Image (cartoon, rainbow, N blue to C red):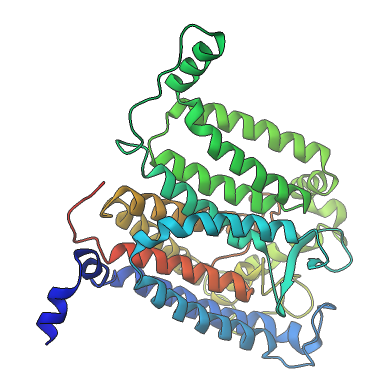
Length: 410
């Protein structure tokens, strides 16, 4: 009966039931487990003293850990469920993922939107009692849609459109079509809409991550290099303009250059982060023995959790964790190179590039190598919905890995 049932399956269904990539899965589970341990170690003092006015921990030192653990379990279940889905199904889902993420970004500016404390920064929404950042969903939506569309750009879009050379408009369109600009217009429009909504929140780190994810998919799809040179110059100019015209961004640059000029204000966090890293030395003060988490280092279980890692586990422990991230990223790109088709390749490239950028920027901020961005460390920083979504993204990578052994297809 089993043999007959197997014969009744389509080729696509049989491929989707192939083995997942165990090295990639092991690295994800290892980082998630270490991340949970570090959230427990970094957060219990803050939870016990109920430091966050927007959260009522009721003095429970395990408050943040229990919530993070619950979302981790949910994320792991989602990862395994998604890994069993034929990733070709993500093609038609991509339109709804992108459209839904844009709607969620717009909901930030409705009564459903939530601000960070007393500030004017609105990055969260509250749906059915769950508070999350729509930018996390937007990252997935952009990657899925760009991957699905760009996977068809070679040999599946039909012959180039013939423009009339009798009219000025036709001649201009023919030139723009030849250099590839017309092909980029739809993606540019989507990016402008998403980035504009993030700018209005404002959410500069989200803008950076989505831009990098979109650019990585475009690059892997074979878009001409000169568009990246031109686009990179334009993005750099726009970023410089936003920094000079946005008060909180300008202040972040100033504090980054000299945090001691405001050591009791905005410079307090980077200074305390560097103290935590320096206090760890080679082998650290021991797991759970951090001193900086006791009311000194802000966001110790969130954006600055890597500083606690360095303090408790030392340089050796920090380097081991960085090595695990590097191995995960390398393995991810290896899977992208061996994916069955272009869609699988682009999907993994977008997800892994997003993960790599987020890891690099978070560690860079913790060590004050770059200005504060507000970007969390994947699998480590506290944030239940963000962790669940990250694990769901890993499920997409594992879904592609199931068909690695299959013949290449376009």
